[in-house]
Length: 326
Length: 293
Image 1 (cartoon, each protein chain N blue to C red):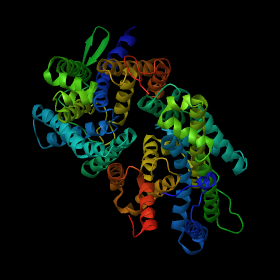
Image 2: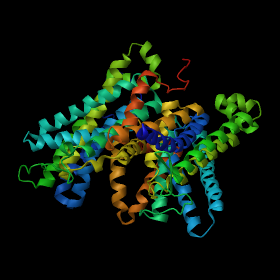
Image 3: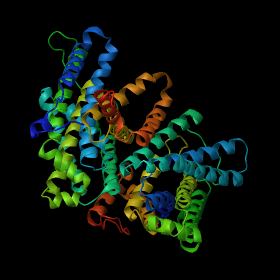
């Protein structure tokens, strides 16, 4: 789309002054959102930022590295419960979040080991099995899951004179922004390019000097770190967690969000997160239709816009940039 | 020993249904390389259709073939209306898998809308309360019928694939699509037939599972995942592998439930599959992954 003349140009996050303007305005609106809108929108915004982190992580794995994974719910549960138990012990939020992410990343590496030998559907079933095993473990051991009533997680404290919800909103916004920036940089670094090379042809990538073992495991570790953070934040946001929240359909929803948003695209992950959060809200009167809408959207997107919402967004921008030429 | 035999029998009877589901997954995977995540929901649709027919006082011998046909029709319609257009636009494999995930969500929503989420009883002619004692072992009517249907279905499928012209065309199509096209095989019809056949097997499994489980829109999720796991265990492009895998999953699951713990009945088969795949990574009988660069 752009004429790239130097490596510096290629690495630029904001390509045109106008883009910078738009992004700045969006950010301003997001920062000021709690001042002028209702509590419901703050709630939705928080949820979208949280979910976007997890979907970015899964997009790194599915979209960039090309490893099909259906065990996201397992990582979510691990992150959420690690955070929940640590936070109950009185460990500071930041440290507990980090621990939750690292714990999920550790399990990600464990799940990643089979990926060194398995491909496509075989890998999918291994990750699926992992998700089910985690779910069963949490439902069977009350020590882990906090018993029948679930685990009560301390909520985010009220800071700087804001209410609890608004402070959580700003925290989620900050975290979401950090992860977005990190992901953009990750994707344009050696690491991200190695991931893409593995996706396109793993044998060729290995011949070109990409260490398959390290990079596949790293991809699993990073993506499950993101998902673990997502789970932990979700637990903190909800204030209580139970294993039932992390079942197979949760994995499917994350998978759908990645596909709808657009594979291998960071904006796509955010769009996907917004989609899966907002659609059930918009159609809250017709709850039974929500899966149908998800399904129809997936089908339509796969047939008419395989690049997802991000691809559509890109085409719209291209159209206006080149107008009146096409 | 008595316990062991008892577990083996119930394992075989559950496993024969998993084998039917696995056969459906493998049929679709072999011919189109698509992992069909909507397989379980297609089967559930067919089962619910049978439920409706039975509640409209259709006799069972009529409701059974009609619901099998209904399931097959659904799959064929899906193939022609969604998979074919997507393939025409060069959808990636991941994209096609996502399509089936989308379809499964649509089916689920539709079933919840039409039949509701509350559980139902399927009026089934075989019951699991009628038992016979053979020595010290209990046999119930339902699991015996299930076993017979599973074995019969597998044998019929084997005969269809290996001994008929249609089966020959199906094998040719899955072996090499362009070559089959050049030889004048109507590959699209053949692929649609594979989809229909797969859904038919799924509905058959669903009909026999419904009386043992509770019929609600999600009742096929677990059997589907296990059938899927069985297909992977046996090797995704081997039909005998699917039967062996399905039976093994059923047996392992029941032995685990009997000897280890009932809570982990659903988890242990998956752990075993992960172990097997680590050492034999194309499944027990699969042959794949020999690629040219």
